[in-house]
Length: 292
Image 1 (tube, one colour):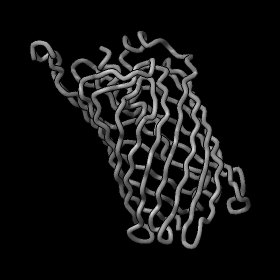
Image 2 (cartoon, helix red, strand yellow):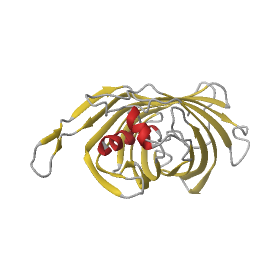
Image 3 (cartoon, helix red, strand yellow):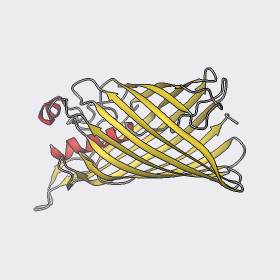
């Protein structure tokens, strides 16, 4: 049962990943579109005390779409979510006699979708440190009880609402070397017995070769308010456990093949965690940037 619960918990880490960074909004009629593949495969996890324990090898693959569109010069709509998600678990074999204890299974489904809005609190282009506010709805569009044992999921089954504040700035590091930095703070209100969360993060990027190549790093932290139902209650209802916490570090590269089309690749790993997979995640994608 412990292995089952932790295999499900990885999805929280997936759906909790922040795709949009910084306070910058799209101009009216402009947009950004990204199609990507995200995955992680792991055979150990962080326990509720931050220690690592082994588990049956589990993998999750998300084919995702991310969209930003400027409704006005200060209001941007955002959509993010796996349009195809695959969660699998290998056979569980006894280490003493080699017998098959639990047969491996897999499910294919939608993941949980996020729909949100970002509003620039400062007039775009008028200040050196722009500030924006975002409000995001997490929709329970994924599957919560797949497989014969109901232990495979592509979503957490809860409707959440998150408010976030971003502040950042852009600057030059030298001739044809551009950079930016931003920080955010967010509060995530969750339903269905999940604990609320407080999130903090920083992000920095460097644009090289006249902004054709961008190298970005992100440090994110999620802390639970520990005000949800107990793990035992969640186990009986076959949904994600509460009180997942982690600090993650990510590195991403974006390269513009043309003025508007580019490719991206990233790796993210938890520096510390509680009730989360102890394995890096990877992503590759292609994007269309119509903001230029």
